[in-house]
Length: 270
Length: 256
Image (tube, rainbow over all chains, first blue to last red; front, side, top):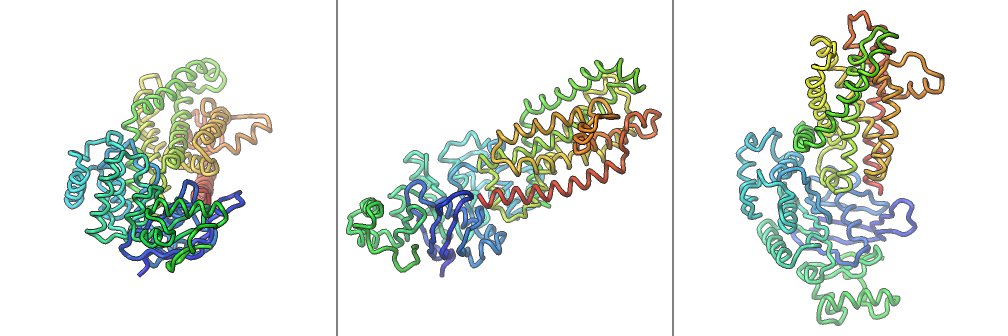
């Protein structure tokens, strides 16, 4: 069953003459790890912004967990968790204060003026999250003192607090060192195995895309390929996803020569 | 209500941790009250019979509340630039609750600063009573809310924090003069009277003075418009600026 349904989606920014997202269609199945892969400026972040109600689509339709993003944005927001490309933590607050703000905004716990006055269930949750993050005292640790990798992991932990149906990750490992990236991926795999959360991520790292159930290659706003990594490699007659990807983009640049036979049977674009 | 309170608490927490901002926000109004008030004391006192330091204090207190909340709303632009506003905007909470929480938070920030200004300024020969101060609480609260709505409407139309700060200064400083913050505005040339008439701060200052000078023989010299005119104009401005600000801010966020 598709938990994300995108049909003929178009997004054109104000005062622009070309579409940032150009007639894109795809489905994401429940529990899948779905990867939007493409070069910088391909339209990955714009697509994610529309899917998460941040931007309004120019045309087309998007349904998340059965709710239309334009008609029922509030329902969609309750059903998704998001980790943005840039950091979205409040650096003036402690790690725990950031978590508390999120938990209260999502209606998980009532507002109380301090950590000590928050319900026991909340404090237990914070303690568990401190273990996951390997931070001794979240309540006293300013966010700015956390390392880049821990901040990223922290944002994912925060995005999962309200048990969303779909977790959107916009280039979650950009700027992280290899060790942090590996640790983050270990955590994500664990989350998916434990809770079956659907994950939609954008990346331009091929080794990350390789781990997805489905890869959607986008370039200049349009879908170029949509299939499993294995099928992509087979169709492009290449031994690795990197080779297949580069061949696909080169083929596009040369007017389609050498490219495969387009999107698979899961949707696709123009 | 929970969402409203947690957003408001965030702003107050930030103020209490930012000692530099707190210090600057206290020193500026005190300089106006004590410095300019004393400079004006001989001339204004002779012309109107009013104590210039007290007049300046009542005006500056209202202006501080207005300006603090208005400037605080500009941090929404800062949040937009650091992606924090996205975190708020993807939460399943209505836009009015988000803006309401921000407005409440900045009002608490302004009230904290206002209380400190009163405490620090009192030893400098200001003639106000406890009853006058209590009566002024409502008008000062209205100054905060209108200031916040004014700030929201200003930033909603602007693309970044730098533009917002530049335009904001341009919009605030003339109001200090034409809004009668230091000296009540009595007669002005027509072209300045028009600008004064459309300055929100003028009505806030006048309303605060109508509370501070209630029952005083100097009421007529200190209050130029009257509380009912002030309340009607401020309530209208609050509604119009808030609705327009929220609509414009959301439109800009979602239709980029």
